Length: 245
Figure (cartoon, rainbow, N blue to C red):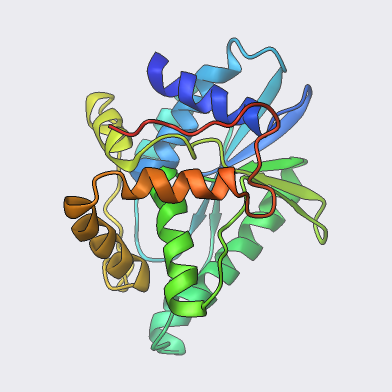
């Protein structure tokens, strides 16, 4: 717990993610990443020099998932919890029968989350992207779009006035897997029909395969984004990159 909060704090400070008085919404899907993010931010809240408050928000896709254990975790952490019920899943898979559902799904979920955040009066939203997500997104952009690109650690959204932050970018996925297991987090089974059948999953398998031959592949890609920075990836202080296990 302390080690992961240390990595999170380092990332938060490198990119100046949290200012005094921030009201931060945490998008909680029920997956290990978002649950770990919630727990770690709740822990950081107790001692971070810039005081901030938290709200947990779940966008229910209408796929029959039970979020009662997530609600119980939020109650234990003393974080207010809001569940937004939608029919995004049935609209995409049953009504429209989308062959490539991920893009539309992401757009609809993002819209529902942004509306909830504004209603709650939050000025920031924390997303559960981690170290491996950043590397995979960079490679996806290169392979499928012919661009050198990745999401940003901090992104200001003009239309809503909300700032997106990604505090777990220094934490590898394997570390989060171990953390979720050791903390017995109530990780839910993803009922999305497209789960494990996406371009991201293909790239994840590619990176895993290449890492057997080039063990420092992920570290080099992540380091390149900071050392020869993509927009908004240059750290505010010294050059920093995590040492994944």
